[in-house]
Length: 136
Figure (cartoon, helix red, strand yellow):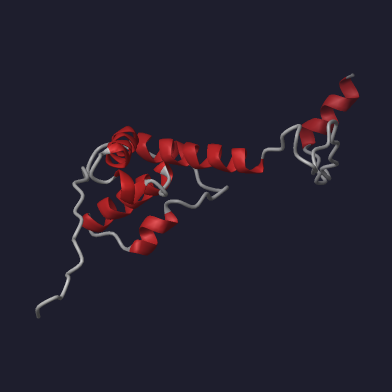
């Protein structure tokens, strides 16, 4: 027993309720706190926010799969049905994805006037289309 060194336990106090702004501010305070700064300097703000949301969901009884699924963007998801917090999180994810895929002038594969041909799906004619053609 003598000479055995136990690892120190580091505890964090995180608010587990609130909105996206609260999570962002809590993550920023945690990252800038003198006691935690050395441990968290390599962790991004968004990672801390995600961790905070996962912890909050866990305390509310949600599974890890549920929490992780909420971070994925579904192009068919109706964003009008989301609450303000979820909508802000989804918009933040879309902004991150846009910046990741964005091409800058200095990028080696940047093309100034890129033209992309999006094939148009064949549209079915409606009865009112036929009628309006005759009138003109």
